[in-house]
Picture (cartoon, rainbow, N blue to C red):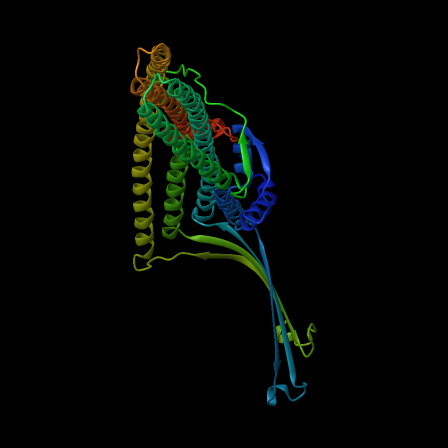
Length: 449
């Protein structure tokens, strides 16, 4: 659970990339999904924000720990003096005082502040991992959108090619006098409509690429070429397995538990106001007519001992502080319960959406097969002179719609699969097992007390 200093270097790099985004020249770039996710993790500004929070939590813990050690202070006064008391002196007076202090007993304030800071640091590490998971999910969905749009372009390109070939065939038949001019005109209209859909699909593809580029930190004009394809890979886990996995691996769920422990420690730290404090200290004082002279014997002294301080009555200030921290604990407990409910609901929704998309894939695959068969039949009938142009164009449109529906089903399945992985808390970089074990150990110790 140690804070890794690599984030300091990554912070500078990410800041430069975020600041300079959009200034790089356009280029072509081949990209897999894994490449895109890795690039986003290195360049995304949300990662930098979470890394900065982690850095802040790390130094807050350092501060809390350092307050338990000794401190050394030095004071110097330089004054112009006069009067009968200094008739045998010059007109300068210098006094020096060095002091060493160290807390011996703080009533639990320092120790509980350290605990609170430790819990906050663990929570910040888990939050950073959850941010990574969110970035991966967003990048995956945008990458799949590129694949969807590209597949749609391919469908419309095929459709336009078929329509062109059909128009050529209709023109030949018209010249031979076997079909009416209406067939030529309707075929031309269908081709024009197909070209229009192709233009729209090509534009959607460009927009999808630009959005993806922004998310991974590339200039919008970069010609990113996705190397993957939309595929169907069965997801074999059952819903109960997914829910159980999420309860053991969701970083934000454990972050809420660490936040609760941090608030409890802060409440205990506030209770220190009811107790006395004990500090050890030593002081050495000198004075003279020079900056570090000690020729004034009456001011040459040293002192060592302990100081006990106890606010017997502070007008219920401590009580108010404890009540505030107790309210924060109750809020943290409610947030933990709410987060637990949200995790289960998120997993269930993602899982049911995945299964629905999976069923649609099978349905649309059958629809595509039937649409292809119907188109082949209508094409053969038209060529044989027993079918109409309208029937063939209708079969063509249904085939294009069926292929588009199949592509959307594949896209939806992969998108919901990514959502399910996020809902389950599938690891990106950080292994949450040590954090979960630490929480279990703390809960066991708490039960024993």
